[in-house]
Image 1 (cartoon, rainbow, N blue to C red):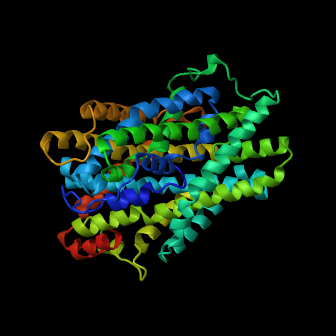
Image 2: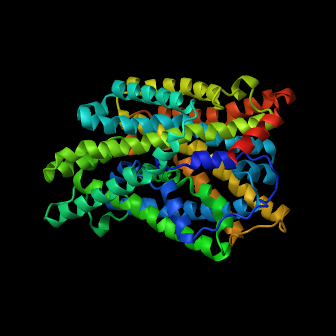
Length: 494
């Protein structure tokens, strides 16, 4: 996912509309399929994951293309059918196809994944800032922990005031934090190679596939599932197309192509100039820029690039702070899933108590950066836990889609995905395989204990994806419901 994307807010607001099986009565404004492709690209594409794949050199092409085929396309096409037939996003899709408690689980996982998303995102921001102040700080765990805590709580303070500046910052994120830096990185890379310099990573046909050293050699593919998550958010716009049946697939194929270019080319450029054994998963983008800038004697550009990357990342974080938590709030007010203390709004109409509770957990996680020596290892573990939790959403979505096609075959749909059953089965198997592979430590985990790794990832998944949500469901009470408040919030965000 892009640091400038907004799947959280859209997914949350769409994921919480209480209308069951209701199709919008008001005609949506028309949108071209190219516009939708650009919106989707901006929602998914990011430079943040480039260092993760750059360690594989030319094999990163394979590691990006495979999940695009088995996960990205099924997600986009299946969610398009669901969005064109049922309002309410993933909550209503799962609630209609399976059950309301499982719908809550889906919304909860959308929210819970951000608990680990924020620390990993802000660790990337910390390393980017370090390259302006002192590059040695990029590998300093205490520095990283402090930056994470300061920036997160600053974000909570800003979000709690309901500022409208967040939207503007996030909307420019794709340009200033992805497209411009990404294009510059690729151009510098081609010029670097064109001047006769050797690539740090082999670029021969023998290296098209990852070196097979057991399951660990393919573990990095798991992180790419999270990189592609968010494709479902723009499915709600399928009804805005003139001819959804033809234009939506066309739009998705164009978006997939652009997303792959944005992911693959910068990753390759990084691998050309930074050796894999020296590459930091958090600071890799700035490592590459720094190396190129030093080579071309334009080091003065380093702070400018860093500012752009940081601004885009912080814009994305602020948008995510506002989105998933609001979605959770609205569903909880409708169904009584959260206690009243977590349903309260501050004077600006913001769910401040949920943000603060989340902040306490985020702070505790941030401290792990100070306690575990290898920052890259911590970053990788949090990225995997984030992916594992978010995969639950997709598992539920694919099953719900098959059930809805069977239970409500005649329900009006603006778009019907071709071979829906095949798409859902492929998506299910890919998601399940990614979840299993996620328990295998990659080389980025270093020489740490395998069982410690499994314990951390498994514990995080079990706690966030099972124990806490079902604890809320069991503790929920009828008097916790506030339908009037939920309707008011829905009307505000409509």
